[in-house]
Length: 349
Image (cartoon, rainbow, N blue to C red; front, side, top):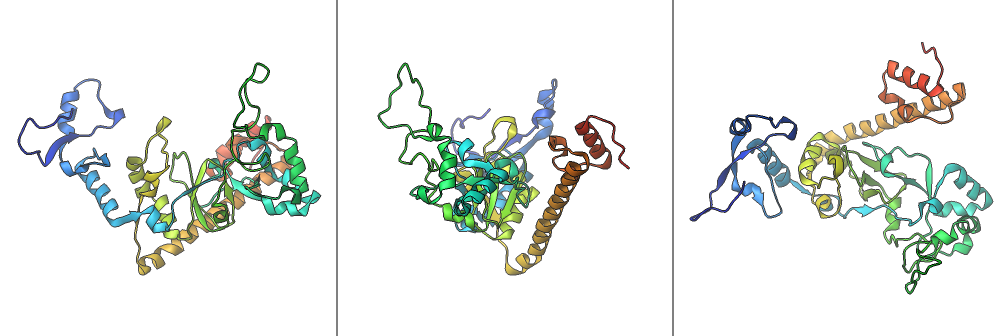
């Protein structure tokens, strides 16, 4: 327990025992606490949050914070959220639909953007799934894009913004469209005034994190509302964010959600400390980062080639989750996953 001193000056230290949840004994708790007890400094109980860590870990946290600069300062901008469409069924499409719209009207290509979901954000590089977003931003002249307009017309009822003076009735207890707002029925729900930034190099990350997965995108991909991005081409920032040390820090810095996932939202993410690099350090680090990016791209290419082979050789059109990333499987695991997918014996040399 914690309580104020009975009187006199506050102590500059206190006894702290840290025991992992899974290591808490069923019996002999007092003895376990005594064994784990260490002297901690009162300065670790800061106004912006307490650090109840053993002295060594507390010292490392303080060193990371002292020697780093906030992410917003390192990147020169705050993080931005991906696009909230208000009705994904209309605005998010696959490659076949995109190609059909562009074939009907080539002008459509200008407002159909490749986009990433939270699940597509991986370490170093995103794993784009061939999906597209119809980005009809506020103020767009939709008549210039007749194929897109015709596509959206099929969903008009669900796209209509709720009038400000609308009230439920017995015949219509709920509004069938989107929330009220100043947008038109064919426009993306949120204004996304920063939309030109999607075209620039940036680092994407997930709204819900179970691992350190920060991905560099230089292809102008948009993101959905389960993603955030920092507009920067500084690959040293990418290296820091993907490092085990920074995941260790963020586990103690960012809020925890269900199942111990981290949520990197708002001020907390903006203040993540990024190590500062001199020119010599950057020159030494960047070749390794570029190699990680290239190797990741090579593995992705190999995965796609294997999946294309499975489709062509065995007619396996629907790829199961177990085979989604063949590179993560050993030979026996791959063979077992293929056999299960085909539901018949398969001789794999």
